[in-house]
Structures are given as structure tokens and as C-alpha cells.
Image (cartoon, rainbow, N blue to C red):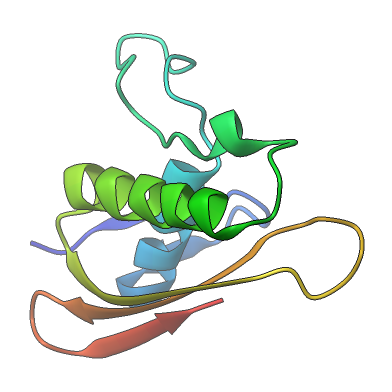
Length: 109
């Protein structure tokens, strides 16, 4: 099955890896409980805002990412999750290495 959609920033058609990347971004940036008619959609990353940057929070973030993508993005299997905070603004950078179900490796981030 081929998925196609519109790029949410430009309105252009997206498919393939670009569609998967946009889907992953949408899943991870949607707080659970905010999508009408699909209340379970999204991730728990927003529950971690203002939490300390320590090992426990890092582990919770990784678990939130893996759980959300396992449930909502069946086209990929997660191989690795890398989290970093590159500067002092506290913004989390997520790098994912995944396998597509057709076994093509795709990197995000």
C-alpha cells in the first residue's frame, strides 16, 4: 500500500520516506488526548516538559517515543533512539534510526 498526503508546511504531495517522517513528527508532537475521535493518538512526550534532564527523564522520553511509534506508525521498526539537548534552550533533539517494513533504512533528525 502506498501512502500519500500533503506536506503540512508547503501543501505539496508527499509520499515514501517524506510521508513517514511527517507522520512520525505528527505522532510525537501531538499530546495524547488532544485529537478528537482518536483520543489515544500521540505521545506522552508533553508530560516531560519542565522535568529535569537526567537519566530517568531520558528513559521516560525514549519509552514515550518507542511506545507511540510502535502503536501509531506500523511502517517502521525502531532500531535506535538518540536524544540530545544541543544548546541551553532545553529543546530536545530526537534522532531515530528505523527499518522500514520493506527493510529500507531511514534516518530522522
